[in-house]
Amino acid sequence: MDTLTEAFLPAHLLDVKRGVRRIVEAELEPIAREIDRIGEIPDIAWSTMRRHGLLGMRLPEEFGGASLDVASYLISLEELSRSHRVFALMAEYSSGGLALALLRYGTQQQHLRWLRKVGDGTIQASFALTEPEAGSDAAAIRTRARKTEKGWSLSGRKHFISNAHNAELVLVMAVTDPEKRARGGISAFLVPKDAPGFAVTRVETTIGSEAIKLAELTFDECELPDEALLGPVGDGFKVAMTTLVDGRLGVGCACIGAADRVLSMMIDHANTRQTFGKPLASRQAIQWMIADSAMELAATRALVYQTLMTYAEGKPIGSAPSMCKVYASEMAGRVTDRAIQVFGGMGLIRGFPVERFYRDVRHYRIGEGSSEVQRILIAREYLSTGREPRETSS
Ligand SMILES: Cc1cc2nc3c(=O)[nH]c(=O)nc-3n(C[C@H](O)[C@H](O)[C@H](O)COP(=O)(O)OP(=O)(O)OC[C@H]3O[C@@H](n4cnc5c(N)ncnc54)[C@H](O)[C@@H]3O)c2cc1C
Image (cartoon, rainbow, N blue to C red):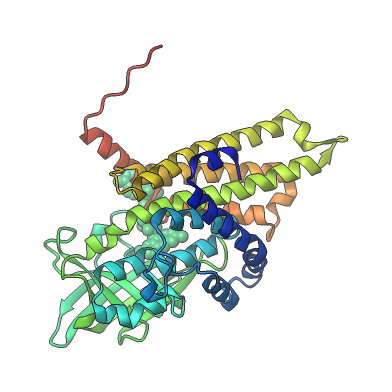
């Protein structure tokens, strides 16, 4: 662990970090290779994560969780991401956005039916907001939910929904009042895989790991009972938005984990690979790539750790989660790019970890709200509070 991390994080978070790292190195890393080989998440990944309490981390013990505080959870995501992006996603599927929304807004009946199963990975669940005509502008969704005598009828299409082809349950955002839209006209629905009129109509892979798939979902007068509604009618946007802070900080931590691992690989390679009779590490061009990566990683840690500690204390953090997401995802892009350069041809070979990290971290600048949208949010906060640029002494 680097000196800054040791100095900055409190003892309990360092313990969490070391504990998760031990599990990652001993048990998850071999599974990471299997994930890349088969292009799917194997059962052993779920059972190993479950055995070590890495699923449902933030859920209360009554639902099989570990009641972990938000900072410990986010630090765990960083460590899981040192191995494979999939492990952090599994932790999120079972304990992040959807599980927290279910915990926060669900009725006792909904908790009993779904929460433990989502939390221990017995079933997988997905969160469906994005549509072909509504990505960054999420309030523009068209999927419509109409009240019927028996409950609700959903019609529309979602796309880019992570892991929905494996999901037994999908949390779907739909318009219940087209006049109000984001201001009380969108509601959240728990849609089981076997709901009549619901189908997974396409599965896409991306430039990232084959195991991370995005699905298109179609709702053709999909019939749902009243109990499918999560939270009050019209509160869907609130349900969706309450999970955003954790999601953005999660991306920040995941990018730190990925960049940290890639930097270690870069350093090992620079020390061992010889060209023209000397190790690469003796060349200034290579040293600068390592120095720049270490420097940017340290700056990202300072921003992300400071934000997550302040958040964990319950203090306001404004647009800092957006800053963490943009800064960390762009840093991870640069570090993994430099790593490929240091590895030369080997860095480009499919199946070699460095190229997989390079492809996987590219997602982080788009998913969970793109860099541009985060910059809009940051600028909006700074412009609205009327902050003047600070005077400098020079
Ligand atoms: C790996 C991955 C996983 C995902 N998983 C899920 C999921 O599980 N559930 C879900 O609901 N969605 C999911 N998404 C969808 C994701 O949230 C959207 O892709 C994202 O919000 C961007 O929307 P879009 O792709 O439609 O791009 P668009 O909104 O069409 O934007 C295209 C480009 O224009 C930029 N842009 C848009 N508006 C502006 C503006 N006003 N000013 C400047 N630039 C702008 C964007 O930043 C982007 O670069 C996932 C996406 C990815 C890549």
